[in-house]
Image (cartoon, rainbow, N blue to C red):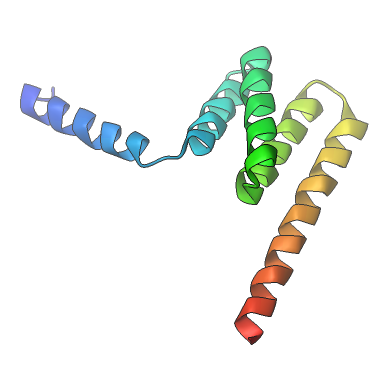
Length: 107
């Protein structure tokens, strides 16, 4: 059994880790947990919100991650064509991102 001091210490460490996450990262983590628990509707709400705000802010990493998790959701809901299209879109973002970083290294 953990002492009260150990529990408080663990809680403080958890709060620090959560506060270090951006809102998009936090929403993506929550959506991943919802998907793992088969809570599809809350996951869809979180992912849709993350996708829209990441797109508006130009956050390509969060955009790609949200597309990936939306593809996982579509696959679990047996919407296989949509899942494939979402994965391809996420992959294009990743390829664009990696080619941009390669060109920066060459300069």
